[in-house]
Image (cartoon, rainbow, N blue to C red; front, top):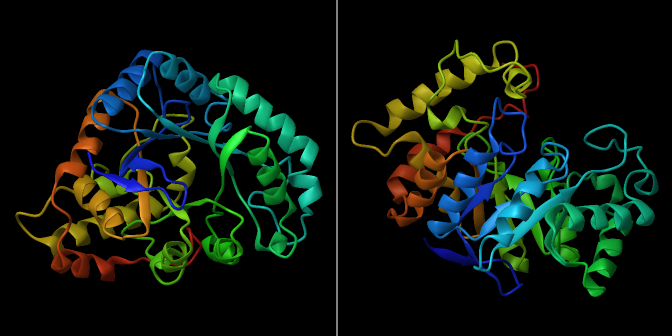
Length: 324
């Protein structure tokens, strides 16, 4: 496993992290023994960064991670996320921060996160979404900075809203966030234009999520693939979305040609190729996935020719807007 600097914080984190949404639920049937086996395998393979959230099984993912941490002696960095109070997701331009991330709410929620994880300090607390409407008065982040000074959290971050990832660029320049969690993959390459260079310039750690585009970039889906009842991917790939995505994955495979790495290795390698990236939190739900994801770190970096082949597969779909 290779390790990278986590922004300006002085942490050395595994470049492959553990995405812990699936172990909380919403990705089809999931047993806790499989989840714990996946966590142990990942850390045994050198992973030391785990990302979770309140919303992953209404805290179940956090609870599992809290139990897991008690069984390990290694230094493991855990990031979690606080959602906004009830309202539109992502927040609209008309939402007031006071109604979504008030100080009282944030303080109570952080205490809940501490209890769920069974830790005294949260390594990284991320707001689970944001709107650039608050950039002129980013009080929720200032509140989190106070909690940082009080020792409740060690670092402050944001997980970007899917439709407007660039909304946090000004915040990075202002120096009030330590990290940014973004969607960056073979289909979603827009962060390379400005977001990633600004993060690198200002020492803001980048946590890459959705590297497999909810699984389709692993190449395992067909256009007729059936997801289990209750699986969020039934909505994500609603209508003709899955067929369109699978067709594009087939084009990627064709452009890479014979002898290329498999799609999971290629997808992870693409995200890791950018120097601004600190860690890629690959979604993991079982031992086999944990081992395979971690093993990618031991492979050579993707060469420039492969990266150039992947660049034209940038898909400007604006997160599933209606256009084809």
